[in-house]
Amino acid sequence: MIGGKKKCIGLIFGGNSNEHEVSISSAKTVYEAFNSERNKELYIVKTFYINKYGDWLDSDISEKILIGGIEKNKTKKQEIFNQKKINFLDGITFQNIDVWFPLLHGFNGEDGSIHGLLRFTKKPLVGCGIIGSALGMDKILMKTIFSNLKLPQVNYVVFQNKDLNDKDVKNEIIDEILKKLNFPIFVKPSNSGSSLGISKVTNESEILQALEKAWEIDPRILIEEGLEVREIECGIIGNSKLLTSEIGEVHYESDWYDYDSKYYSNNKIIIPAEIDSKITKEIKDIAIKSCRALNIFGFARVDFFLEKSSNKILLNEINTIPGFTKNSMFPMLWEASGLKIEQLVAKLVDISLDL
Image 1 (cartoon, rainbow, N blue to C red):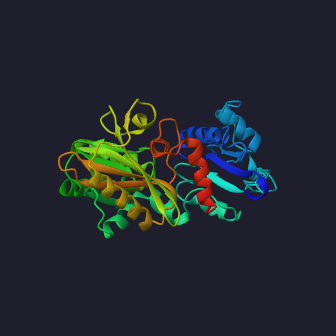
Image 2 (image 1 turned 60 degrees about the vertical axis):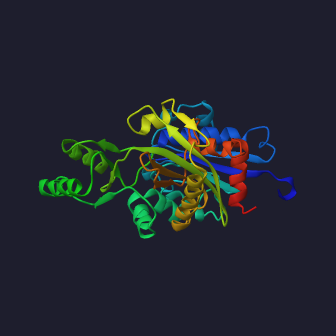
Image 3 (image 1 turned 60 degrees about the horizontal axis):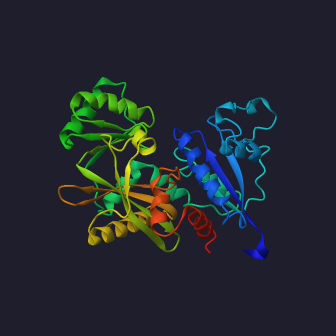
């Protein structure tokens, strides 16, 4: 660290996204890690909360939200359009930031939007760039690239910008699903995270409702064939060289790994996963290959299915800003790999600086 000067970390959280609450929980964990005995001699943290209306709040208020001094729902929409200056960053002091650490899950964050904005500050950031973030967030584009590279995936079909208000269109979509996929199926909005907007469908009568639920979030919809699988996850960190964590498995009591089971259930986490060493190596190899294919670096979590009947590895998706909540797999994977959360956040800063 040059001259012993502490690095100032700009922690951004909240956001105009359906994963707003998850982002706040992640930011609390990372904030505490930077303020640990180990790190507080090395870093200063400035926090930037973006409320559900998309307004940026100053660092003092943002910090109080993280430590519980102010309830987040007490922040109100700012009437910025009635002011002479229409600048959503007006009054936000960010010139002294050394490294940005965006923890905006979902829209306007994980999709590359925040990365594009922060590029104008000419400061490094933790995580990957615009392209990798956008591709990692968009399930349809991501799966299309994986398909072209012959990476193993479940069977799927895609519908983009179809008018579900048109009865004929709805019938055509349902007919194609029935023709190409076997039940159960999973209906997903292309751009969403934390399993929001996703439905498990077990028969024809449930398809339309599931499509409409996904369509509310994104007019581009992905439908995947459901299999009897184990949920396997692998952490990635690095730039020119990508490192893989131990492999983890999630055992959940719900019917499938939905939003509630991810954040509110006592799931059983097994790290390292009880799988053959050959399968472990193959999962790690595919994790690196898939990240390289999408230009994903910095940090990410790569999710897999392992088919129970055949032990076939199936690549599911990549999360470019994985959760850092107390129940999140990403920090657990790296702790099992020898990096406690305090060491992990410091390592991610070093990676952003290419140290």
